[in-house]
Length: 509
Image (cartoon, rainbow, N blue to C red):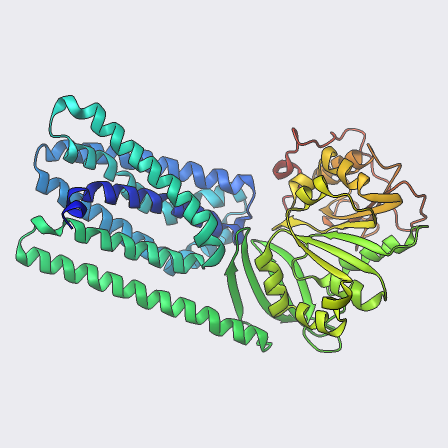
């Protein structure tokens, strides 16, 4: 206990800086369903939070100098700052949807929207955390000649806390717990830290602070339980087919939302990751293995190849809509599915009838469907198996997986195909105009290895300026596609691992 009191300031500094980094990870996760998870959003989050820390350091330095050598005043300021940051973290999950919805209603620019959202939700709590370091340095500095040693120790501890927070948040908390629930826990931890500083207060003040802190912690616990239970209940309602309900999950790679709607054919369950529509399934028993999204039906174009298609690789599983269709409609054919996120596969089992497919087609015994949890590019880098066809439907929100679009990735894809094998990839783009930069660059990149590259628009055949799903087919085989559209890619640049500006060339709409 004496050691706890002796090093109380170091403990506080270490923990608040860990919380600071977890907040940065949570900020990106909260913003991603509305603004995506591209580098543009990350840049906005990092820039705003660094700004808030800079402002906090500056204000904290002014406060520290005003308090002079009054240790009690300095400790009181530390408590006030931690309480303020705890309250501000507490209100983030309560108000985030209102604030962000308001922003997206009036601002269409992703960069500006992400910056304003980060400012509204995360600037102040990060600023108050930033104010602590200079105040703690002042409190620890008993002799002027020790300033170098003390400040070095303080910044080393703060950096170490930030490192631990990064690993704890990125590897443990965010992949396994909801963003809202994590925020309630962080807020509670901030309030608990104040108990380390109560010993120098008078009895009355100590009782008052204890009461305030206890009430705040109880509010956090109640909110945590309510949010957690609501998500569990919503999950059950979504499984039962209730309309208007949604359930959220956080994984290591994105924020997942699952919900039900109706279309002209039947009841549909959707899976969104960040702000992208990743997969869907019909929920009525006679339709669960049918395809909802029109573009996914275009993967059947692989059967136009002169080769017999038996072994297929699909990169990007999500709700496993096409793998379910492929296994149920094409007898004795096999598919390997590479999905980077194991939790997504688990959700597909739970919500998208993947478990039922396994039972209906005895997949655990015949191994017609093979599940590979890995990044698609990493799998291709070490793959020695040859496939008749490779299908790519790998996206992060609406952004294609960058590392699968480059010349180096195309080489790995080409080497993973049998002779005259066929590669199909879904590209959301216009075919001409400003919004066609990415598809033109990708066609040019594919042409570096494949003799023939075909572009088949999935909906609008006669309007090249509409952003839509397009099936791009690359092969050395000569295939007659009636809907093939010729596009002028002569001015496009080949995409490489060194140069692949996905965020600036994909369509903005």
